[in-house]
Image 1 (cartoon, rainbow, N blue to C red):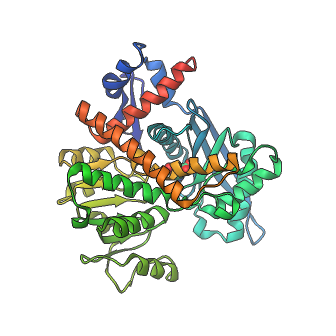
Image 2 (tube, rainbow, N blue to C red):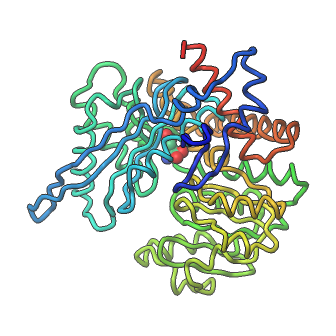
Image 3 (cartoon, rainbow, N blue to C red):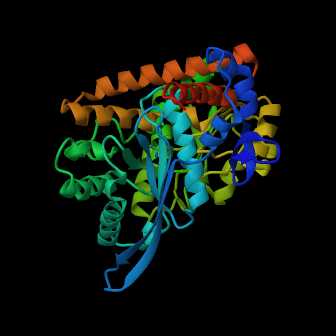
Length: 432
Ligand code: GLU
């Protein structure tokens, strides 16, 4: 956020400074923009969201009563292309969080160089308390409230926390009723393959995290087969990350948690068995025979070489950072899971931190592939999707490492430098 007193621009999370853009501009952008000075006006502009949509949606419950539900769509920046970002359903969603997440999407799409800006949506409700048909009615009402603020060349939503391909199919269906021209399928990504979705989208975020992990191991001279991994979150991102890291890279998954419980086994956890167990035990991991149950939050305190926060933001706090003994790699699979204080402690301890704007970009990269396929009406094979994802992730990782080494800065700062540079260039070329 823009700090009025110092005239400085900072990326903040929950009011705490995460990243000081002034230093990024000083080392990178000012030198690169053909001698054109970036001034505080541009920084202040980038700190403000372009459009914020606040809604109160009347949801008809199954018993016939009406429940008012608060919802937000924040469109941060579209200098490089249409707004892009997920929609989350969570009872703790609020406007400030959605703003911060929209802001992150702008840097993420710029960093991996796909032609989008950044947005995020949030609906303040716990979907676990709703029936299937209540979630369907809520989603369709959300789309009708959003009206022309979303569209294939305007703003393209996608899955996020507690939303899935089914919800995306409903978004497309509702939108297509009023927008039959053009390519209404391209209004939303992360759809089921039966309704215009892309091969490989479901696991794309996890696959992208695993690619970053493999590259980070190479960069640090580590053998993934010798590393113990703890994964916080067993939803779409956590599950696929753990599965790919174990099956394709040979690392041992020693701990897994979800929203309610956690399990630990030093000899490694059978992920398929754990998934089957959670699917048949109301999403609880408690009592899983292949591991010992531990308190949910102790997962982040387990002794391990690799920690993968794949749930909500701010999970990796000072307690977690201070407890880290053997930690070598922090793989930010969730959006902004590390507090600035914890980041400083881990950086000091020499932990290789792969920031979320890079680590979890696989999801939005394959969203881009899905959008391209929808617009062209030409569908790719699974192997083509994986190969293209691989190429883009490796390229972005390489650019981040090169800048980090050249300027002697962390991977987070290098990532933001590259992203800010691209967004600022686009804004200036467009006549800011
Ligand atoms: N919600 C995901 C993210 O935070 C995916 C966004 C998208 O595909 O547009 O990156």
